[in-house]
Length: 336
Image (cartoon, rainbow, N blue to C red; front, side, top):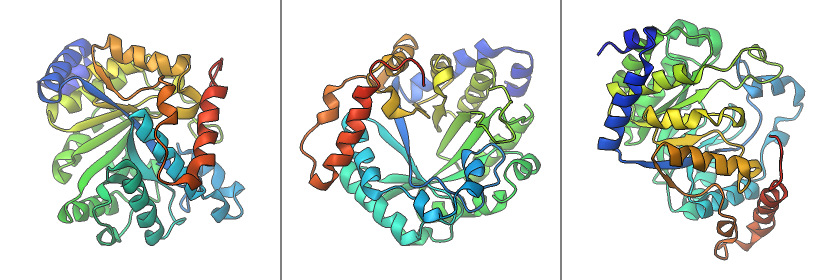
C-alpha cells in the first residue's frame, strides 16, 4: 500500500479502516489517558517557532522563578495515579535543572506512582546517571525532515537528538519521539518519519496538533484538518503495527479524538487536566472514546477518585487539595 498516495488521493477512510483493524488485533481496545508533567516554564534555547516557551523567554528575568515547586509536581503525580492516568513524560526547558535534580524528582514520582517515568528534557549526555526510575527517553523531534526541522527548531540539532536516542537504546531505555502536525510540513515528509522510526527503532511516537500560541510565528495559522492529522497517524500505524502511538489535541478540537482512535492511537493527551476533570469537557472526552468503541483506562469524570487513600506524604496535602479544589471550581466552566 502506497500510504502517501492514499493520503494525496484523500482515501482516508481506507487508511482508518486498515489502521483500526491492525490496532485492535495487536493492541486491543484499551485507551490510556496521558499527562505530561512540566517541571518549569522557561527554556534557555527558546527559539522553536511554535513553542509557548519561546514567547516567554524574554519576559522571564530570573529563570529559577520559572521552576515549579516540587511539592506541586509530586501532588500532580499523586492525582494522576488516583485518576488512573499515565504520566506521559516529565518535561522542562533547556538549562533550568541539573541532572541530579531531575533524577531526584523522577525517583520520587516513581515511588508515588509505582511506575518508572519517561523523560523529555532536551538533548543530554547524562543518560547514564539515571536508573530504574526511568523507562524511556523522548526526543523532541517535532518534524522529521532535517531541513524543515532546522528551520522550525534551529537550536535543537536533529543529529544530536538521534545520538541521544541511540545512547538511550544502548543503556536499555525505550525510545520515543514527538511530532507536531500542522507546522507546514509536506506530505512527502512522511517518508522522513518512516525512515527515522526505522533508523532509531522507536518504541513510541507522540503526535500533537499545532496549537497556535499568541506571540509566536504560528499565532494566525489554522490547526490541521482532523482527517489530515488522522491520515498521518493511520499511516504510521499501518507501517509500524507494534509501535505505541499517543495523540494530543486541544479543548477546541475534542472531536478529533474519535477519529484519532480509529487511526491507531493507543492513548490521548494534551489536556488542561484540572480545568476539565469532572465537567462537560472531561465527559466529552469519555464520550469520544465510547463512540469510537474503545475502552478507557482511568477516568476523566469520577470525582470520588480525587480523594483517594491517605497519601504517604502528608506534606503534599495542601498541594493536592489545591488541585482538587480547581476541579470542583470548574464544574460549571463554560469555556477553556
